[in-house]
Image (cartoon, rainbow, N blue to C red; front, side):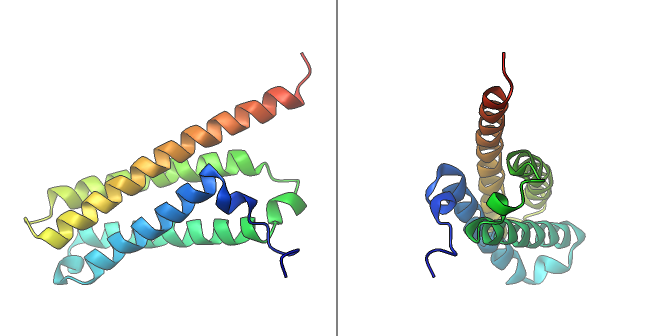
Length: 144
């Protein structure tokens, strides 16, 4: 069974960031979902963004753990992760800022928006690491 799983990514900086993002996004989603404020448009958007991005992170982790990037060489996975994290940052930070403005001083909604902002910070760190990894692989691939 261990031959099928590739756990190097989970043990790397990027993998730890992805797992942390997944946990924090699920906490943010649960915080908003557990209140009656989720009927408002701002929190509906926040719910959709956190749930959608957490599902995307989970699918990316699933594919990476089962070694799909090593088998599907037609996709540049470092650039795909860079784009994925950049879009995630844009949507999560937008949803978190809107949720922070509309918290109505409710502690659980404040916690949800803080979790969203923390997840967007982790996305920025992941974008930086993806950019560095993509640049290093590009400099190794192209002869000078």
